[in-house]
Amino acid sequence: MRAVHPPGPQPWEGRSVKTPTAQAAARVDRLRQARRNRFALVCASLVLAALAGLLLSLAVGDIDVPLADVWAVLTGGGDPGSRFVVHELRLPRALLALVVGLCFGLSGAVFQALLRNPLASPDIIGVSAGASAAAVLASMAFGLSGLALSGGALAGALLAGTLIYLLAWRGGVSGGRFVLIGIGVAAGLVSLRSYLMTRAEVTEAQNAFVWLAGSLNGRSWDQLWPLLASAALLVPLTLAASRSLTALQLGDEAAGGLGARVERGRLALLACATALVGVATAAAGPIGFVAFVSPPIARRLLPGQGAALVPAALTGAALVCAADFTAQHVLPGVQLPVGVVTSVVGAPYLLWLLARAGRSGRGG
Image 1 (cartoon, one colour):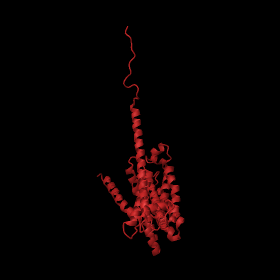
Image 2 (tube, rainbow, N blue to C red):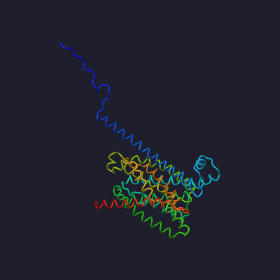
Image 3 (cartoon, one colour):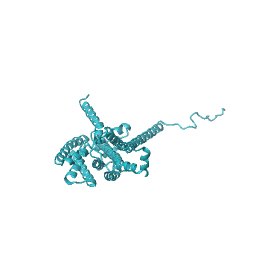
Image 4 (spheres, rainbow, N blue to C red):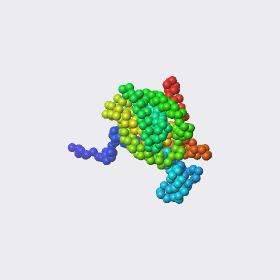
């Protein structure tokens, strides 16, 4: 009888065999890690760009301050002259540019993602117009300033947002209807603001015109502290409320099917985004197109990663810092309103977007 020998070791024994499911899971993990790495890299780059703009604004001006002296002032040292120039004249304006840009960028990202419309920007659909009209009314009719003026602008933004929401409600809110009604409300508020300007004294009207262009000229710590306090409250609230944003982007029925509280989530996000616009407008005026262009820039830097709220906020901060530095130095001896520079960037993009929409509507 032949002896039966046990089979020898097979070539695949001793090492793990990856099934198709395991290979797919490993590939998904690699893709997720790559997305996380790209997100971190983009955010770090935007932070560095914003900080570079901040340092340039502190160092360059009618009186140039070396970067070493700027750093000394920021760390509590430096000579009295450098401390006065950096700490009293330039630092409040530079920080205000950062925070204002962050607020506008975050607000624009929320509006565009929630309403699923690239035109759903607060400076187009009437929210900024509501804040600026209320601020002009509070300043010229009641002589308010400081915190009271900020409160008036916030109230105006919230009232405008509420009016648009109520007019757009038809058993729900569609992005297209919200945008169209918002544009109409914006036109009415701009007319109201223009009427108020005609009733003002010449000096008041001149100052208001500069502010309405979006200006950081002459800003001090008095305007910065209320903005910082408001942003410290509203930014975390907005990010916390954004947990339902991914579901809401799928539509009301799909979001409800996933267990999301559709109206509560939408109202919370709209309220937070509107409040961000109000406090930023009160501090620096209605700086145009920052909320409009920051989200698409962030989405292009991070394709396929949803609303990209944090990158959009950082993009807005870097954009306003760069625009403010340009506004101060592009024309020797003249300080332009920062809104003029942002409009140069944003207006062509708006025209391109409208032209593309027109071609799509004609089937071209």
